[in-house]
Length: 129
Image (cartoon, rainbow, N blue to C red; front, side, top):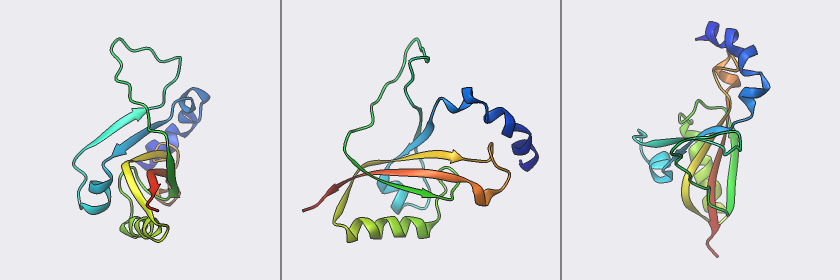
């Protein structure tokens, strides 16, 4: 995998591969409270250059999002990070609303070092007050 990642780095650094943001959508309860994620959705950001015969379109809900950048591999987030997010939500009197959006910013295609993998986790929240 490391050899493949080193080989593919120049290819995936090309601007055409950086135009579309790909990510994953998880159920927040399953993500935070279950040991195994059984279901998720893969998505790409909308772009006028994309044309599909039968597109499935879903718009991310507007609202307040808690965004966390962390070292992770797709849906495999360290339990300590999850605990810190839940603690932050509780301490700031927030309520989780909706699912988790996970955007891989640097993965095994763009780095050969797992400690350099980076994801952006976005969770829609609302104030409870």
